[in-house]
Length: 228
Image: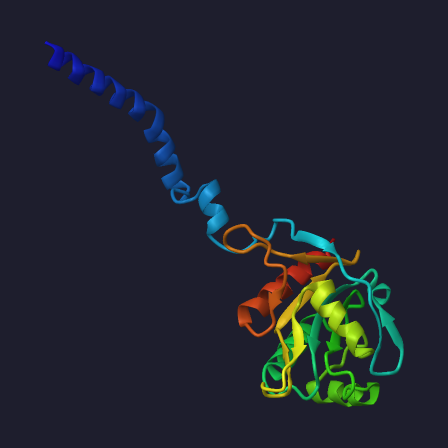
């Protein structure tokens, strides 16, 4: 008798569950959303188009000299979305790839007065304004809002390592004599560093300037910031 009552109880629970859950499951299947949910959405990919880009904080203040011998600072870029990198003109390793990808970004927004680029040398003893002007021609920089910047070496290294927390350094054992990352920083019109989230919902901070996906992502996010 107890056994029969247990079967009846279990059957009743299954019946209630079926009445409540099955219509919902069918509805999600019809909408092709059976594998979606809050948790899976956060893990399933990079920032979606309508998500707000993360605001990391204000860009470190800087004032340097460009390829035309003109002072350029973070205030120069007020009202503009811009991409910032650290490089050096004689770099034999990652810089050519960074240059090519930055030109791709330039071309995607060429003619837009609200977009700019700042390329800061980590070899200012060699990369004078005259050298940078020639380098700009070689890499294909055509935008009037693309500044190649130089200045005091200690100042630049502090700006990179402490201000942006993007590592640069000298190393006589590596090809070219300098070490640096291939990262691009994205700054909005109000001077804030912005970025998207990774697959786990964490801010990526900076974009990989050596990777096709990183370049594609930053172009998408530039478009979003230009509309703000």
